[in-house]
Image (cartoon, rainbow, N blue to C red):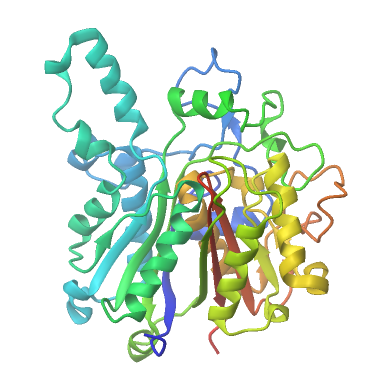
Amino acid sequence: MANRRVVVTGLGAITPIGNNAAEFWENLVAGKSGAGPITRFDPSRHKVRFACEVKNYDPLDYLDRKEVRRIEPFVQFALIASREAMKDSGLDLAEAGAERVGVLIGSGVGGLNILEEQANVLLEKGPDRVSALLIPRLIPNIAPGQVSISLGLKGPNSCVVTACATATHAIGDAANIIRRGQAVAMLAGGTEAAITPLGMAGFQNMKALSERNDTPETASRPFSKDRDGFVMGEGAGILLLEELEHAKARGAHIYGEVAGYGMTGDAFHITAPVQSGDGAQAAMRMAIEEAGIAPEEIDHINAHGTSTALNDKVETYAVKQVFGEHAWKLVMSSNKSAVGHLLGAAGGVEAVASLKAIEQDTIPPTINYSEKDPDCDLDYAVDGARRKPVRAVLSNSFGFGGHNATLIFRKVN
């Protein structure tokens, strides 16, 4: 298992600041915000009336009419990003073998749209009028199922559901499937479409969301002292993972290696992180140990960085405990300042950004930072993107339930 190295040869993304990986990266580096007033539904009765929606999105631009009628937006996003990653990789399925290429895509929430719609049908018209497709449209695992069917991938097929750590767990678990020799390549990541009346109400009423309705573009402000909650996002981020020797043999473009993976549990609280950051620290240390590198070799941390008071403080503290003096020398930034919090898809989109940072030797900025917090005193690239050599990136994701996941990506020389 340890002898098989796993690399990334394909990227796919659909996000609030770009409907493909290249556009997403360009706008991320430019410091563009994806936040704005909600257009998916009438939010006038909600306390929070803005979000980071995918823009200029017509599913018929990507999918045929039959697909669009029968699948939920979170599955649409997964299909779009998966097809992009597969095409970007140049992987020949006939050569690789359909039975050797799998899918591991997660969603934290699944099909909220159809659930809300059919709950109303039940209440208004009775149980006999509820759609027979309700269950297969709302379950999170239908995303990897539909990707497998659409692309003809017959290898390992599974789904992770660990809230905001979902996509990071999916990528790490998929890499381990390849390391075990059970697949030669895997599509892996996360997808989410929870900007719905119920989704927004649930998060706003637990006081997790920013309430800056008058200035949505600057509402997501990770590590800034005046942060007041995250901004809901949507989309998908998918990687094509591949066994290194297989990728080299076919001359594939390699973005970077999945070098380390750590996963732990806080065993503390259903929504709040333990203030010592012990679980986050352990996940980071586990990933560093598996990667076999010194902490000083990590140049960039793609932070969980939600823009909530507790998360940003705890994550900063955990990083300082793990990295010591090096914590002040590396650059840590949050993509959520631009795209909001994509929940189960967050780690997938952030993995795309981490690999582009390595490829382009560029660290994207944390935007909207306005006030120094003494508890958040590291270098968050608040003055714009940084052009500098990036040997390795550590990417964190932490989810409700106390789930902690960390990935380390590094250059392949």
